[in-house]
Image 1 (spheres, rainbow, N blue to C red):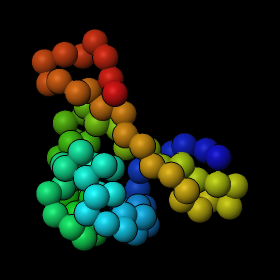
Image 2 (image 1 turned 30 degrees about the vertical axis):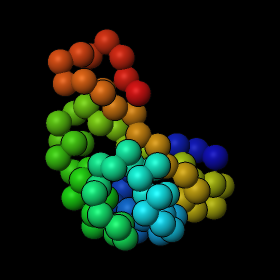
Image 3 (image 1 turned 180 degrees about the vertical axis):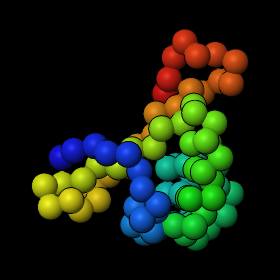
Image 4 (image 1 turned 60 degrees about the vertical axis):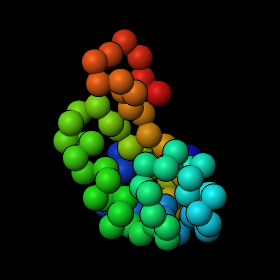
Amino acid sequence: MKLRNFKKEDAPIIAGWIRSEEELYKWSADSFGKYPLTGDDIIENYTPRIENGRFYPLTAIDANGDVIGHLIIRYPREEDESSVN
Protein backbone atom coordinates (compact mmCIF):
# COMPACT_ATOMS: atom_id res chain seq x y z
CA MET A 1 0.00 0.00 0.00
CA LYS A 2 1.11 3.53 -0.81
CA LEU A 3 -0.35 6.91 0.03
CA ARG A 4 -0.60 9.62 -2.57
CA ASN A 5 -2.39 12.93 -2.88
CA PHE A 6 -6.12 12.70 -3.53
CA LYS A 7 -7.09 13.11 -7.19
CA LYS A 8 -10.50 14.18 -8.46
CA GLU A 9 -10.89 10.83 -10.21
CA ASP A 10 -10.71 9.13 -6.79
CA ALA A 11 -13.92 10.82 -5.65
CA PRO A 12 -16.48 8.55 -7.37
CA ILE A 13 -14.67 5.48 -6.07
CA ILE A 14 -14.66 6.81 -2.51
CA ALA A 15 -18.31 7.89 -2.74
CA GLY A 16 -19.20 4.36 -3.88
CA TRP A 17 -17.99 2.94 -0.59
CA ILE A 18 -20.73 4.78 1.34
CA ARG A 19 -23.76 2.48 1.36
CA SER A 20 -26.10 4.16 3.85
CA GLU A 21 -26.88 7.46 5.55
CA GLU A 22 -25.46 6.03 8.77
CA GLU A 23 -22.16 5.16 7.10
CA LEU A 24 -22.00 8.64 5.56
CA TYR A 25 -22.56 10.25 8.93
CA LYS A 26 -19.89 8.12 10.60
CA TRP A 27 -17.41 8.67 7.78
CA SER A 28 -17.93 12.41 7.36
CA ALA A 29 -19.17 13.59 10.77
CA ASP A 30 -22.12 15.03 8.83
CA SER A 31 -19.95 17.43 6.82
CA PHE A 32 -21.82 16.64 3.61
CA GLY A 33 -25.40 16.81 4.88
CA LYS A 34 -26.97 14.74 2.12
CA TYR A 35 -27.23 11.17 0.96
CA PRO A 36 -26.44 9.57 -1.41
CA LEU A 37 -22.97 11.00 -1.75
CA THR A 38 -21.49 11.50 -5.21
CA GLY A 39 -17.96 12.05 -6.40
CA ASP A 40 -18.94 15.61 -7.37
CA ASP A 41 -20.10 16.21 -3.77
CA ILE A 42 -16.68 15.20 -2.48
CA ILE A 43 -14.86 17.41 -4.99
CA GLU A 44 -17.15 20.36 -4.22
CA ASN A 45 -16.54 19.91 -0.48
CA TYR A 46 -12.78 19.39 -0.74
CA THR A 47 -11.79 22.06 -3.29
CA PRO A 48 -12.10 25.17 -1.10
CA ARG A 49 -10.63 23.33 1.88
CA ILE A 50 -7.59 22.21 -0.13
CA GLU A 51 -7.11 25.76 -1.45
CA ASN A 52 -7.14 27.01 2.16
CA GLY A 53 -3.97 24.97 2.77
CA ARG A 54 -5.14 23.38 6.00
CA PHE A 55 -6.70 20.22 4.57
CA TYR A 56 -4.75 17.33 3.07
CA PRO A 57 -6.77 14.46 1.58
CA LEU A 58 -4.77 11.34 0.78
CA THR A 59 -5.61 8.20 -1.15
CA ALA A 60 -4.27 4.73 -0.43
CA ILE A 61 -3.49 2.61 -3.47
CA ASP A 62 -2.41 -1.00 -3.82
CA ALA A 63 0.45 -2.39 -5.93
CA ASN A 64 -1.75 -2.22 -9.03
CA GLY A 65 -2.63 1.43 -8.44
CA ASP A 66 -6.21 0.63 -7.40
CA VAL A 67 -7.79 2.92 -4.81
CA ILE A 68 -8.20 1.01 -1.55
CA GLY A 69 -8.45 3.69 1.12
CA HIS A 70 -8.79 7.36 1.90
CA LEU A 71 -7.85 9.65 4.78
CA ILE A 72 -7.60 13.31 5.58
CA ILE A 73 -5.06 15.22 7.62
CA ARG A 74 -6.34 18.62 8.65
CA TYR A 75 -5.98 21.42 11.12
CA PRO A 76 -9.16 21.14 13.22
CA ARG A 77 -9.28 24.75 14.46
CA GLU A 78 -8.76 27.76 12.23
CA GLU A 79 -6.77 29.71 14.81
CA ASP A 80 -4.59 26.80 16.00
CA GLU A 81 -1.73 25.37 13.96
CA SER A 82 -0.21 23.40 16.81
CA SER A 83 -1.86 20.08 15.95
CA VAL A 84 -3.48 18.23 13.09
CA ASN A 85 -6.09 15.47 13.03
